[in-house]
Image (cartoon, rainbow, N blue to C red; front, side, top):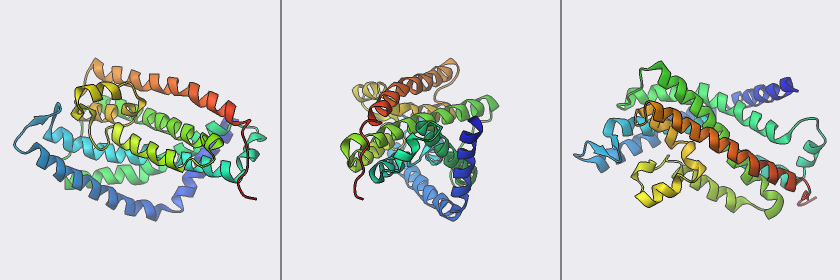
Length: 264
Protein backbone atom coordinates (compact mmCIF):
# COMPACT_ATOMS: atom_id res chain seq x y z
CA UNK A 1 0.00 0.00 0.00
CA UNK A 2 2.89 2.34 0.78
CA UNK A 3 4.20 1.94 -2.77
CA UNK A 4 0.78 2.97 -4.10
CA UNK A 5 0.92 6.21 -2.13
CA UNK A 6 4.46 6.85 -3.37
CA UNK A 7 3.18 6.35 -6.92
CA UNK A 8 0.64 9.09 -6.28
CA UNK A 9 3.52 11.48 -5.58
CA UNK A 10 5.33 10.41 -8.74
CA UNK A 11 2.23 10.66 -10.96
CA UNK A 12 1.36 14.17 -9.72
CA UNK A 13 4.98 15.26 -10.23
CA UNK A 14 4.91 14.02 -13.83
CA UNK A 15 1.57 15.73 -14.43
CA UNK A 16 3.00 19.03 -13.21
CA UNK A 17 6.07 18.49 -15.39
CA UNK A 18 3.84 18.46 -18.46
CA UNK A 19 2.83 22.06 -17.70
CA UNK A 20 6.21 23.33 -16.47
CA UNK A 21 6.16 26.38 -18.76
CA UNK A 22 3.42 27.85 -16.56
CA UNK A 23 5.76 27.65 -13.58
CA UNK A 24 8.69 29.17 -15.43
CA UNK A 25 6.52 32.21 -16.07
CA UNK A 26 5.41 32.00 -12.44
CA UNK A 27 9.01 32.65 -11.33
CA UNK A 28 8.82 36.03 -13.07
CA UNK A 29 5.47 36.82 -11.44
CA UNK A 30 6.75 35.91 -7.96
CA UNK A 31 9.92 37.96 -8.56
CA UNK A 32 7.75 40.96 -9.41
CA UNK A 33 5.71 40.40 -6.21
CA UNK A 34 8.87 40.22 -4.14
CA UNK A 35 10.21 43.36 -5.83
CA UNK A 36 7.01 45.26 -5.10
CA UNK A 37 7.06 44.24 -1.42
CA UNK A 38 10.77 45.01 -1.17
CA UNK A 39 10.33 48.63 -2.29
CA UNK A 40 7.16 48.96 -0.19
CA UNK A 41 8.89 47.82 3.00
CA UNK A 42 11.96 49.89 2.18
CA UNK A 43 9.71 52.96 2.06
CA UNK A 44 7.96 51.94 5.30
CA UNK A 45 11.28 51.57 7.12
CA UNK A 46 12.59 54.89 5.82
CA UNK A 47 15.46 55.87 8.10
CA UNK A 48 14.57 53.26 10.74
CA UNK A 49 16.95 50.36 11.14
CA UNK A 50 14.55 48.10 13.02
CA UNK A 51 10.76 47.74 12.94
CA UNK A 52 8.69 44.96 14.45
CA UNK A 53 11.86 43.32 15.74
CA UNK A 54 13.28 42.92 12.21
CA UNK A 55 16.04 44.82 10.42
CA UNK A 56 15.70 45.97 6.82
CA UNK A 57 17.94 43.09 5.72
CA UNK A 58 15.90 40.55 7.65
CA UNK A 59 12.67 41.90 6.18
CA UNK A 60 14.05 41.66 2.64
CA UNK A 61 15.08 38.06 3.23
CA UNK A 62 11.77 37.30 4.98
CA UNK A 63 9.74 38.58 2.02
CA UNK A 64 11.79 36.61 -0.50
CA UNK A 65 11.82 33.30 1.38
CA UNK A 66 8.14 33.57 2.38
CA UNK A 67 6.96 33.94 -1.19
CA UNK A 68 9.23 31.19 -2.47
CA UNK A 69 8.14 28.93 0.39
CA UNK A 70 4.54 29.60 -0.59
CA UNK A 71 5.28 28.10 -3.99
CA UNK A 72 6.07 24.81 -2.22
CA UNK A 73 3.25 24.57 0.31
CA UNK A 74 0.52 26.09 -1.90
CA UNK A 75 -1.97 23.70 -3.55
CA UNK A 76 -5.57 23.55 -4.70
CA UNK A 77 -6.61 20.43 -2.81
CA UNK A 78 -9.68 22.22 -1.48
CA UNK A 79 -10.92 22.99 -4.99
CA UNK A 80 -10.08 19.50 -6.26
CA UNK A 81 -12.04 17.85 -3.44
CA UNK A 82 -14.98 20.23 -3.82
CA UNK A 83 -15.20 19.49 -7.56
CA UNK A 84 -15.03 15.73 -6.99
CA UNK A 85 -17.83 16.02 -4.44
CA UNK A 86 -20.00 18.09 -6.77
CA UNK A 87 -19.70 15.73 -9.75
CA UNK A 88 -19.95 12.60 -7.59
CA UNK A 89 -16.59 11.14 -8.64
CA UNK A 90 -15.57 11.05 -4.97
CA UNK A 91 -17.93 8.08 -4.57
CA UNK A 92 -15.49 5.94 -6.53
CA UNK A 93 -12.80 6.76 -3.97
CA UNK A 94 -14.93 5.17 -1.24
CA UNK A 95 -14.62 1.70 -2.75
CA UNK A 96 -10.93 1.85 -3.57
CA UNK A 97 -8.44 0.14 -1.22
CA UNK A 98 -6.75 3.30 0.01
CA UNK A 99 -7.44 6.31 2.18
CA UNK A 100 -8.81 9.23 0.17
CA UNK A 101 -7.33 11.87 2.52
CA UNK A 102 -3.84 10.36 2.39
CA UNK A 103 -4.05 10.15 -1.41
CA UNK A 104 -4.84 13.85 -1.59
CA UNK A 105 -1.93 14.64 0.72
CA UNK A 106 0.41 12.59 -1.47
CA UNK A 107 -0.83 14.29 -4.62
CA UNK A 108 -0.29 17.68 -3.01
CA UNK A 109 3.20 16.62 -1.92
CA UNK A 110 4.07 15.55 -5.47
CA UNK A 111 3.02 18.98 -6.68
CA UNK A 112 5.00 20.58 -3.86
CA UNK A 113 8.19 18.71 -4.77
CA UNK A 114 7.82 19.88 -8.36
CA UNK A 115 7.37 23.48 -7.25
CA UNK A 116 10.32 23.23 -4.85
CA UNK A 117 12.73 21.90 -7.47
CA UNK A 118 11.59 23.82 -10.56
CA UNK A 119 10.06 26.95 -9.03
CA UNK A 120 11.26 27.83 -5.53
CA UNK A 121 14.93 26.88 -5.91
CA UNK A 122 15.64 28.64 -9.23
CA UNK A 123 13.36 31.48 -8.17
CA UNK A 124 15.33 32.00 -4.95
CA UNK A 125 18.59 32.10 -6.93
CA UNK A 126 17.20 34.75 -9.29
CA UNK A 127 15.73 36.82 -6.46
CA UNK A 128 19.03 36.66 -4.54
CA UNK A 129 20.76 38.22 -7.55
CA UNK A 130 18.19 41.01 -7.87
CA UNK A 131 17.69 41.99 -4.21
CA UNK A 132 19.91 42.13 -1.09
CA UNK A 133 18.77 38.79 0.30
CA UNK A 134 20.98 37.41 3.08
CA UNK A 135 20.93 33.62 3.10
CA UNK A 136 21.98 31.80 6.31
CA UNK A 137 25.39 30.15 6.29
CA UNK A 138 24.67 27.67 9.10
CA UNK A 139 23.71 24.23 7.69
CA UNK A 140 21.70 23.62 10.85
CA UNK A 141 19.45 26.58 10.08
CA UNK A 142 18.87 25.28 6.56
CA UNK A 143 18.03 21.81 7.86
CA UNK A 144 15.61 23.15 10.46
CA UNK A 145 14.00 25.47 7.92
CA UNK A 146 13.43 22.65 5.42
CA UNK A 147 11.88 20.51 8.16
CA UNK A 148 9.62 23.42 9.15
CA UNK A 149 8.76 23.97 5.48
CA UNK A 150 7.55 20.36 5.31
CA UNK A 151 5.25 20.97 8.28
CA UNK A 152 4.08 24.17 6.57
CA UNK A 153 2.95 22.00 3.68
CA UNK A 154 1.24 19.50 6.00
CA UNK A 155 -0.66 22.15 7.97
CA UNK A 156 -1.69 24.12 4.88
CA UNK A 157 -2.84 20.92 3.17
CA UNK A 158 -4.85 19.92 6.24
CA UNK A 159 -6.62 23.28 6.20
CA UNK A 160 -7.25 22.93 2.45
CA UNK A 161 -8.68 19.43 2.81
CA UNK A 162 -10.93 20.50 5.69
CA UNK A 163 -12.18 23.40 3.58
CA UNK A 164 -12.79 21.14 0.59
CA UNK A 165 -14.71 18.59 2.65
CA UNK A 166 -17.19 21.28 3.67
CA UNK A 167 -18.61 20.92 0.14
CA UNK A 168 -20.38 17.82 1.53
CA UNK A 169 -22.41 20.08 3.81
CA UNK A 170 -22.57 23.45 2.02
CA UNK A 171 -23.11 22.17 -1.53
CA UNK A 172 -21.20 25.20 -2.81
CA UNK A 173 -18.24 26.25 -0.68
CA UNK A 174 -16.68 28.65 -3.20
CA UNK A 175 -17.00 31.58 -0.81
CA UNK A 176 -15.44 29.59 2.01
CA UNK A 177 -12.46 28.65 -0.17
CA UNK A 178 -11.86 32.26 -1.12
CA UNK A 179 -12.12 33.35 2.51
CA UNK A 180 -9.67 30.62 3.51
CA UNK A 181 -7.11 31.71 0.91
CA UNK A 182 -7.25 35.34 2.06
CA UNK A 183 -7.01 34.26 5.71
CA UNK A 184 -3.96 32.06 5.06
CA UNK A 185 -2.08 34.74 3.11
CA UNK A 186 -2.89 37.51 5.60
CA UNK A 187 -2.80 35.77 8.98
CA UNK A 188 0.13 33.46 8.19
CA UNK A 189 2.46 36.45 7.90
CA UNK A 190 2.94 36.30 4.14
CA UNK A 191 1.63 39.83 3.55
CA UNK A 192 2.51 41.35 6.95
CA UNK A 193 4.74 39.59 9.54
CA UNK A 194 2.89 38.86 12.78
CA UNK A 195 5.26 41.05 14.80
CA UNK A 196 3.83 44.09 12.99
CA UNK A 197 0.29 43.45 14.22
CA UNK A 198 -0.96 45.22 17.39
CA UNK A 199 -0.24 43.30 20.59
CA UNK A 200 -3.82 42.08 21.04
CA UNK A 201 -4.04 40.94 17.39
CA UNK A 202 -0.69 39.16 17.54
CA UNK A 203 -1.82 37.37 20.68
CA UNK A 204 -5.02 36.29 18.96
CA UNK A 205 -3.19 35.05 15.86
CA UNK A 206 -0.93 32.91 18.03
CA UNK A 207 -4.04 30.92 18.95
CA UNK A 208 -4.60 30.05 15.28
CA UNK A 209 -2.64 27.62 13.06
CA UNK A 210 -1.84 30.15 10.31
CA UNK A 211 1.40 31.42 11.90
CA UNK A 212 2.84 27.91 11.57
CA UNK A 213 2.59 28.09 7.77
CA UNK A 214 4.72 31.13 6.93
CA UNK A 215 5.76 33.31 9.85
CA UNK A 216 7.49 30.75 12.07
CA UNK A 217 9.69 29.22 9.31
CA UNK A 218 10.48 32.70 7.99
CA UNK A 219 11.49 33.92 11.45
CA UNK A 220 13.92 31.00 11.82
CA UNK A 221 15.36 31.47 8.32
CA UNK A 222 16.03 35.19 8.82
CA UNK A 223 17.58 34.74 12.27
CA UNK A 224 14.78 36.53 14.11
CA UNK A 225 14.19 33.32 16.05
CA UNK A 226 17.34 31.46 17.10
CA UNK A 227 18.65 28.89 19.58
CA UNK A 228 16.19 26.91 21.65
CA UNK A 229 13.37 29.25 20.56
CA UNK A 230 13.77 27.92 17.01
CA UNK A 231 13.08 24.37 18.18
CA UNK A 232 10.17 25.61 20.26
CA UNK A 233 8.45 27.09 17.20
CA UNK A 234 9.05 23.77 15.42
CA UNK A 235 7.17 22.22 18.34
CA UNK A 236 4.32 24.67 17.68
CA UNK A 237 4.12 23.38 14.11
CA UNK A 238 4.08 19.75 15.23
CA UNK A 239 1.38 20.56 17.78
CA UNK A 240 -0.87 22.20 15.17
CA UNK A 241 -0.34 19.28 12.79
CA UNK A 242 -1.55 16.87 15.48
CA UNK A 243 -4.46 19.12 16.52
CA UNK A 244 -5.76 19.44 12.94
CA UNK A 245 -5.88 15.66 12.51
CA UNK A 246 -8.91 15.48 14.83
CA UNK A 247 -11.29 17.83 12.95
CA UNK A 248 -10.07 16.35 9.67
CA UNK A 249 -10.91 12.82 10.84
CA UNK A 250 -14.30 13.82 12.31
CA UNK A 251 -15.29 15.81 9.24
CA UNK A 252 -14.32 12.99 6.88
CA UNK A 253 -16.32 10.39 8.82
CA UNK A 254 -19.36 12.69 8.89
CA UNK A 255 -18.98 13.58 5.23
CA UNK A 256 -19.12 9.95 4.07
CA UNK A 257 -22.81 9.84 4.99
CA UNK A 258 -23.63 13.07 3.11
CA UNK A 259 -22.71 12.20 -0.49
CA UNK A 260 -24.93 13.65 -3.18
CA UNK A 261 -24.40 14.57 -6.84
CA UNK A 262 -25.21 17.94 -8.37
CA UNK A 263 -26.27 17.75 -11.97
CA UNK A 264 -26.55 14.50 -13.87
